[in-house]
Image: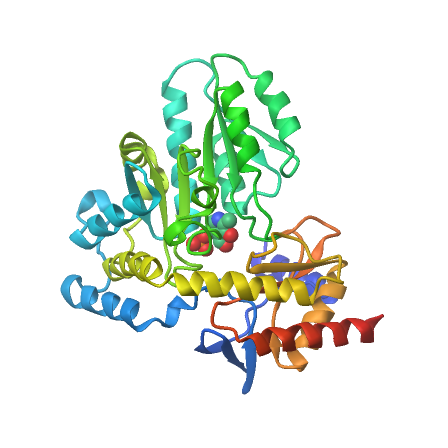
Length: 396
Ligand SMILES: Cc1ncc(COP(=O)(O)O)c(C=O)c1O
């Protein structure tokens, strides 16, 4: 069997269907511009919502930690890869999220795996029928991969459909741990979980809530501490996952929860145990990033104001979905080719936006996913909206 031949045939099929995935080489000029094939484009496709990836104070914190600790951490956390920089960042995170503790991992994807693995292990040990994961259908792939890999029971409920979730919880065997898994701000729709509704459900049924705040950190809540905190529901989630690859401008993820749960992650979260720990320099950058966000709320305010502006400019386009001030601004276009074509047209006009297609989003909901950065000017937002309108009218 010729492995490469098989792959090449499948890739050719994708190419013919205009579905081949590839990675253009870009150069980041600053947080709102990139260079692609020698052309300068306005960036509207990055999750660096606050523009902190170019923040000098954060970069300096990383540089200093690198001088002290070296670049690679050299080992998994349990085998000598855990430094004072990691410990300090975890303390800062727990304070920020108001949790007993936090565990840092090299990515948000891994943090979700580790959190789910800890739930599965602990639920398995508790006796009874183990764990059943109840997952919002639009939850991120990392959560879906994680729950499926546990081998425990998994049920999906339609996006934000709490009546269905209520029925599932009402039917739960008494000896089975129920873990509801959702995102606070959904990465592809820019809408929010019904956290108030989940709080009501918690009064009726026993379940644990695992909340992925990847896209809410830095954007919502006091000091950017998340959407649950924004609603005054900081204690609602039993376990929260945060990522630092988005508004924090770095890389990495963390599981935040009680001290006992975090010890559970360190003891049973295979994604933590069997992976070299995150770079100490990045741990230091994460701690600094939290500090900078807390000290400079103007960026959070400006981000939400600019996000509101883009949505207002596009208010006549009913395909734009999501929360009024969310920096993820999706325009739903149904067909993949429509989304691809529009992204290309915008690129020709000097704008870099993402076309998102299945399987990243459900079939028939391909979209243009525009993301706002706090450092965009009002004029840049107007220009994007105007050019998008022009391109769409030309298509009509
Ligand atoms: C909701 C959500 N959770 C988790 C992740 C994974 O985070 P990371 O990119 O840090 O691995 C992402 C990233 O795209 C995400 O959107």
